[in-house]
Image (cartoon, rainbow, N blue to C red):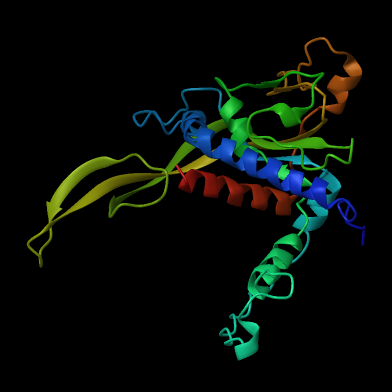
Length: 280
């Protein structure tokens, strides 16, 4: 197992924790706009048409940082459920007062526990931040500057220069109506025709909806770019790499998106997309 990069640098680890917290706060600020953009790219904003109102670029997953460590962590099994905490024991009569240094022993223990918190991960989820930057079916990141300065980003590995950005996205989203259902409010993406009907056995009124369950169709792509590389999605229709603003063919070739063909990976991205839809 690799040694923790923050092992001898507790101050750097604390600064990274603070940077990740700031990124989370920024993502919370822009999450509402990102969700509206996601709904627009999915085409759910136009309830009268089964076709999306835009080219349809949905950022399904985006991770910034040390990707080998992210992938290794993703392969780890989930941790077992935590055991229930034992009931606190009352302190002995002679241990309730301040310790020899004048500080209560409980405060000392709490400070020690805070100082032993887990090191920060070497990556950060930036799915919300990138969906916020999508406009009319396009995502453009200019090159030449680190991506840690973007809103909702942070530098999760200040000790390393090997940071990369992984983007998994769904392009040319199409909606295919599968079946209709008349019933209670459902959590699926659907066309809603508000109506009211009387219950037979109760006097109160309940609201029901006419739902058209919709299946999204499209192709999942993945692309990995360096920390200072440009990125433009989607790729040109000719099948080449994304436009790089004339930075050179080498950088463009390194940023060529690849369709996701692994079945396990496709299923994982479909599950992630479903979670994004349910959050709308």
